[in-house]
Image (cartoon, rainbow, N blue to C red; front, side, top):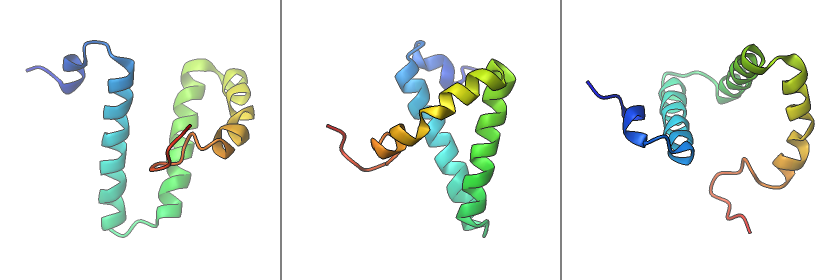
Length: 84
């Protein structure tokens, strides 16, 4: 059986889009079941950072996180906002 990811032809942009959709679907299901969205956000950040640390190490992730304020202010994580 062919998995969805196998059909992406190693396209990183499409893979990121698919990953985000899976996460958004799980998020909406948890919210529907009554899980507080702030708790979901905190758990998602923890899970993401833990995974990155397991892959790249604490120092590399700390360096990446140093740029988060400018990326947030730049709208990189704002869905539905047009970036110029």
